[in-house]
Length: 411
Image 1 (cartoon, rainbow, N blue to C red):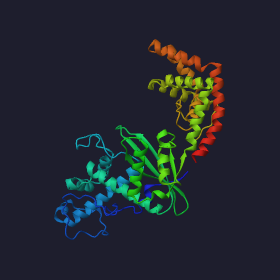
Image 2: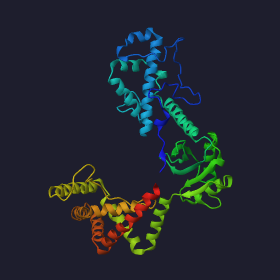
Image 3: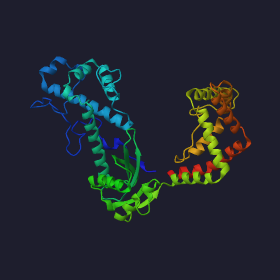
């Protein structure tokens, strides 16, 4: 597994000034802020707690220094949110809103701990508060550019691989994610997320143009590509017109690799469907999971039953206690493309088999409609049949072996 790329690596100084956050000489927008002819020296330290707010109007230099101080504070908040992957914006950011969004609420929280800070925030020029959506996006773009430039500098003229996948976001736009894999100067394999771009469609030629546009923008030579990592879709792996074939035409050393763990999962699913009893077993397993997890009420019943069972087993010294042990869980759904999902689904059912039967019996006896009772009765009959239980334990033994291989392939 490649060494992850973190934002901390690219922000060396803890209290970077607003000019240091920029990249490519990009300056933060200042709108109509009145900057004095002789601003205070950057290294000059101040104590916000001892500031007389009345002196801010009389001393422009002190006002700008306090303003810079709070800009730096907000930059620190922005970095923390970027590293945590948290959303900045809120649904309603108007002053009278109960929750104006994560970023504005944290800035307000800082002011609540210090009256002088709160007064400075209130008296800050409204056209230079750095909290508007447009300014937020510009600052985030500056952070992004600085990180990309640092990654580009690390790669230098070395060879690298590209890992690409596309997916549709919540706004129904097709987005393509690009990850660069390379060996850094210390000899560690690095995998760095390099960009997310919108593509009009998923045609191989469109994806190729998008990738080349990002690479050329950062002066990354196409001829230095030594590997391509995509999924197994036809537009990606196509031998003649797929993305891997188009890139190979331009760079004959860019070998295509389909994730081995993903291929193993697909192979197991395909092989299981060729065996009719196994295929029917997974259909029945999905049916049972859907019946038990169909509502919050049934999930709560399952969790309550688990809690009582764990408490009883601990009382009779059948279970060990300790950190991370005896966790309450739910039934897991199996997915054709999710690594080890079938193994997790089978294991979760075996772990809480008796409790699942108990929930189904409750639905049969207390179901709101005859349809619910009928589905629960069918699921209970399936779950307690000899064939189902036999295949359930058989698949757990087999999938345990393949899961070890899958985990090794992911590394």
